Length: 506
Image (cartoon, rainbow, N blue to C red; front, side, top):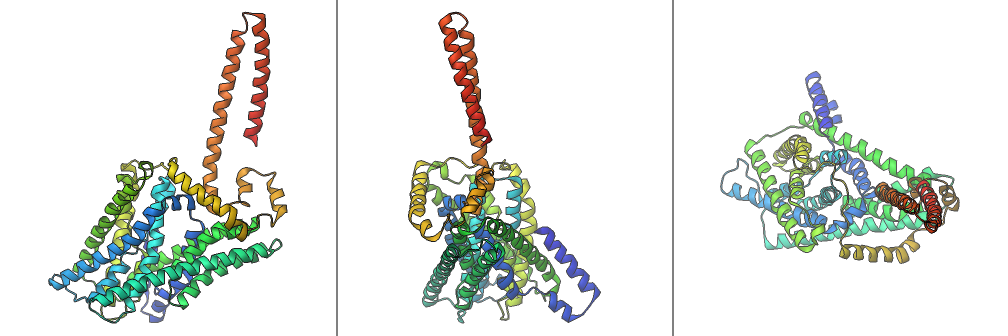
């Protein structure tokens, strides 16, 4: 992420020094429409499709608190603080209440791509990763809806009617977007269930991607949030549609979503660097400094209190430690989504809002993003990617839902007997290979941990059986009756060893 931004800044500097051609500047300028229609949907869909749903839904309460309640707290705090210092005359720009709300909502969109990349590299606890990742994905969708809501009003002053209309419009857009995403995901699953693509896996994969993008387009066209629709479409596709794909299509969709999202993210941050030289900037140092300060305080005001609330509602085993809370506060980077949203502000304060947003993005990315790995090392959180055992209550709730899903929903939406030759081919494969045809892409990550645990337990059993056989062998030397017992135990031990060895091979 930081490398891509620096590369974009370098390209922008070279172009700025080498030519004054306005057509070239216009060509390389960050276009919010291209970002919103072609780059962002790929990134968001991949987030939902390849999400580790097990960890995500286990931490769903905290994710909803941070993303939904936290984003609203952040938006209101930043907006009201900016409005307060405007009224006090401490700011060089006369922002209206609407300007403050627009800026507060767009600057609340977090984008911790570089932090998550570090998490994956060094290996942090799954709960920490799930909370940072889940909050960022949901937060983006909510921030976009909030910005759309405030941009839709012409009034510049706060009123009771304005507040209630904003809340109603926000809830309508967000819930409607989720419904569209889920509906398109379910339609995709049903279509793939009843259509045979065994001879053309590329067409099958293309259909999945086209329908996912369609969820984004439909939501945008009717005034909803395409981001929220694409996210939930990806989650539904991973849980149901994936099981209706051929094995080749499963591999194609899993790898292609990763690749397309990575390329899209790289382009986005290169364009972000280019924006340093391709836009007319209006720097107001006081606005930038106040904005950074308010962002840090707003982040603390929702991470720590909401973490305390989450811990009150959860068992001790599932609580968020102070270390995790601090890392989550630290991971509140701003990125391309915040900058892109700032480009939709077209009135006279738009250039100031855009320049301030870009400054906040660069500050958080290079300062907080650059210090993330040293912080994880200092807090001893590196290499802690194991998952703790669930509490009984969490297990019971999860098992009830999985049982209901397995008995009623999946049989209606999926057809695992659709490709019998695929199951036969999997019979001679390793467990990792055959799992592709059975489970969603997120479940693959949990397989290696389960296999290693099983392998270790088999080793322990083997050692215990060997030890017991040697003990019985030594004790049987004293009497003839003991010799016969020894021989029987040895035979049983050998049979047990052979059986365990065959299990390990399987």
